[in-house]
Image (cartoon, rainbow, N blue to C red):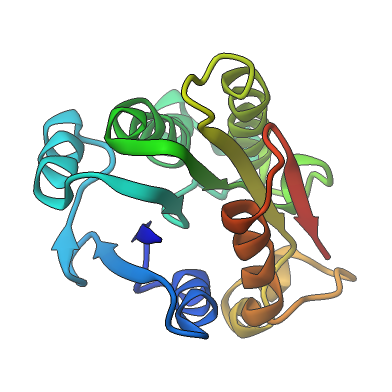
Length: 201
């Protein structure tokens, strides 16, 4: 399969690429904001369109990209909240809306959410809202995608590799290695299900 991975230079993205490269049966196109085979700004419609024009037809689209805002609700502004809406929510939705037209028949889209969609944490109102919205989009989009195209989301808990930066936000949460989370992306790409949220951890 020809697979484009957006967010390929991040902790999770690198693990997904490593997992998909095993066996050598897939052609992986790495995409990042500033690194990779191609660059994209998922908050910009023209940038996303230009990416797919360059990459051409693909069999699978994977997104491990998207920023969120973490901060106390009592100090949060609408502009703060908009960070996650424009980036992780609309950015990933944009990849799906544009990318669907570049997928071969029977292709797939895999987006990324996170455990805070189901388990809210302090200072995580933006993250919970955005992750829940992405999952809602996936469930609804699965009902309408034509040509056998599938769409799923992967919702990992906090990654072991990210505990140094994010551990204080997740007291008592058991982390999982990025390599374990990456298995869910293979399941989404090579499996047959659609409209699913694969929870890891």
